Structure formats: C-alpha cells, structure tokens
Image (cartoon, rainbow, N blue to C red; front, side, top):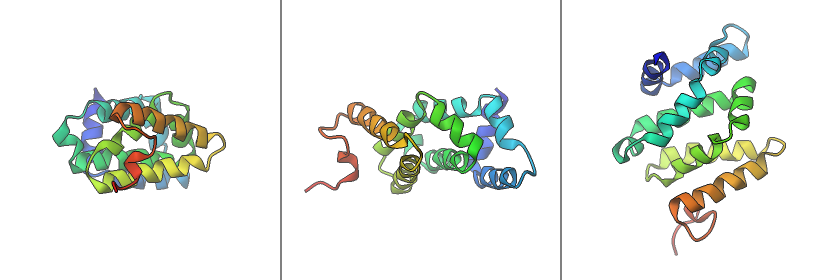
Amino acid sequence: MAWYYMLQAVTTHYHGLVLHVKAEHRGVCSFVTRFLNQDGLSTLLFFLQKMDYNTAESSIHTALIGCVKALMNNSNGRAHVLAHTTALPTIAQSLRVRNSRTKVAVLEILGAVCLVPGGHRKVLEAMLHFQNFAGERTRFQVTTPPP
C-alpha cells in the first residue's frame, strides 16, 4: 500500500523519478532497485490498466507513462519492464487515448524497445494485443491518420 501513495506523489511530480533514475545511473542511490523490489512496476502497470476514462485522458496518465520511460532509462528498470509478461501490452493500451503527449511517450517507449535484441518481436506482439484491445482492423491503424 505504501507504493500507492508513492505513485500518487510520483504521478504528480514524476520528474522526481527521473532525477532518482539519473542519480541511480551515477551510483548515488538505489531508488529504482527499491522501487522494483517492492513491486513498483506491477503497481504502475495496475494503475495503467484500471484507469477510468477521465483519468486516462488526464496528465496523470501521461505522468504514469513518464514513470515507465524513466524506468526504461535505467538498465535494471529496463530489464524488469522487458521481462514482465504484461508490461508492453499494457503500455500499448495507452495508445487508445486522445492525449497526443501520452501517445508520443508510448511510441517513444515502443520505439526504444525495438532497438533491444528481441525487442522488435515484443513490440509487434504488443501492437497485435492493442489491435485486438481497440478493435482495430490493422495492427498499426492507431498510428496512421484516417484518409
């Protein structure tokens, strides 16, 4: 339950997570390790899955995706995200919103994953999941404007 309150604070000021990740990169603290060890990633993904429409269209959603981006900038965080069975499909579901900042952040995450060995296949699987989730005819329909 402590992570619930921490995630509330992080979604309000997710730049704090970014600063912690940068400090972790320099070896100054172990925030990311503690976050992951206390099931922070699963909690973050839970919030992404359970948002109502208004929250999904708000800056809270963008901040949650920003937290995932910050984790992806840390080798330990990236390894946990890539190893988590539902992380990428859950992140891809965030493409369903109208908020363009959220969509861009999600596409940046998925694009970065494509650069990791085996990541291209994981992104294709996540986009196939999104296609079914959103009821789209084609896998990348969300990324192309209507004619």
